[in-house]
Image 1 (cartoon, rainbow, N blue to C red):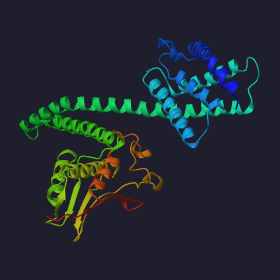
Image 2: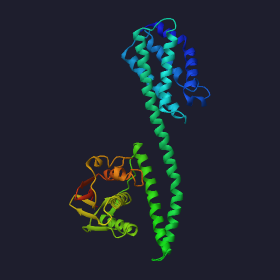
Image 3: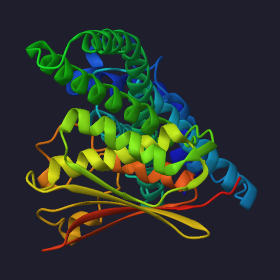
Image 4: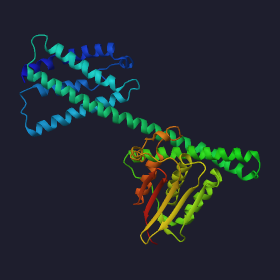
Length: 365
């Protein structure tokens, strides 16, 4: 490396920025909406950093190398963060800006004489690292913006949905059996419950993606009674499809709300994907230290490769692609069970149907 390349870059930094901005405005469509790419961008900071990297006047101690790497990463991330805030900018635009900058730097610095091999390698390596840092931050910032929008939207939707749900429940209570309007109100309530569940799933998935834990409040729980209540409610909506085989006096500490949510999710999945003419069996058992609940349905088995992605968020098996939902139900069910220090597993084979098995530690009173 040479002081000559460093000095030329420092002397021509404004020229480089001017040429780069002109090309960016001509070749990057998203830039036409920005007042000044130079003033609103981090690239002047980047050029200053590159001047130091090309200079041999600076002693490259390990501490200095580390400090330069940290500063370079900070500048690249600043650029990526800025660009993610512009609605028109894409990852392609971001990367192309750096390609243009590299071309302009070489064009200006080699007007008088070619750069040395080492200087060229430093510039190329620096820009490649800057692209990586900026692209990483661009993706992270864009994800954060999308998460914030999703959380805000879902929160705002909860209140009107709650009003509609309460009104539908009140209407349903006043309608007598046999009234044709009762069937309509029942379907309406089922649809509202599905939407409400989807919104809650999005909120919980956002918390988990942000590194937060689910809000689990433990209380005394009669597990057999809890499962019975779920079966009764589901029978009201889906008919007499469910068979409960349960031992009595199964008591523990758990979050009734969240465990109920898991059981409902698994049972509804059994309705969706199981054989429509066979029952869905819930088997509840206990040992001295563990509670086990199996939810079984007959029908086509889940392929082994599909079983491997069942509990991943936003992933759906081929047979589930036509069903409504976000692909979050099983991911959240597993997260809830694990928050209870338990496990959720699937067993599925030809001729044996499919079983989702919940195992929970028994927490004695």
